[in-house]
Length: 216
Image 1 (cartoon, rainbow, N blue to C red):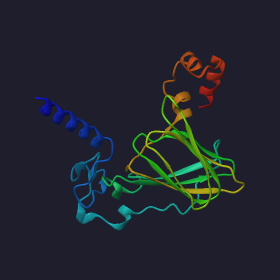
Image 2: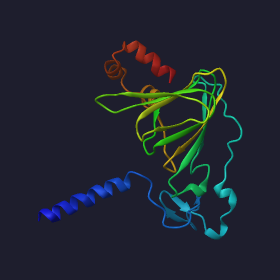
Image 3: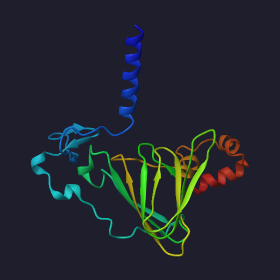
Image 4: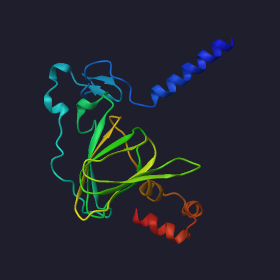
């Protein structure tokens, strides 16, 4: 009986870890297509008929800089299954990140992916914060050619501390890693979170919280 219970527990644990990441593909590719009549539904998308697949289904360009003329001074050009249908079921994605001088990619998390970044240009201060109870900041200054990893689910950020534009290429182990911007989620939720709740959580005056909610 003990052996049977242990086997069930191990099976449940294996199932949990298997569901924590994108499933492994069981075919060469499954090019995503919004064709409910002729497609085959796999992993959240319909597959295009393999005989109709073309090179453009696996291609996307990020040669042009993103527009960093915004309050945070950065632009993230996503390269996931929404831009490249051929990424469907392959469990990877990428992004081009442009950051203006002294701009930043504000604190955020990716609930479904670990992120690895390669600095192509500029000097960045990057870091992530470990989970409770320590909330330790792990940070480093990166220069051209440097690589850094942000573990899955942890809050992290990138700040351009140089006087020139910075360019970063990021990789993810999910076809659609998603992103939760902390400030936007907390102060810009729809409908808004009760400002009294946030004032107590952040130990701020409720009027400050209301002002932040208006900004987001």
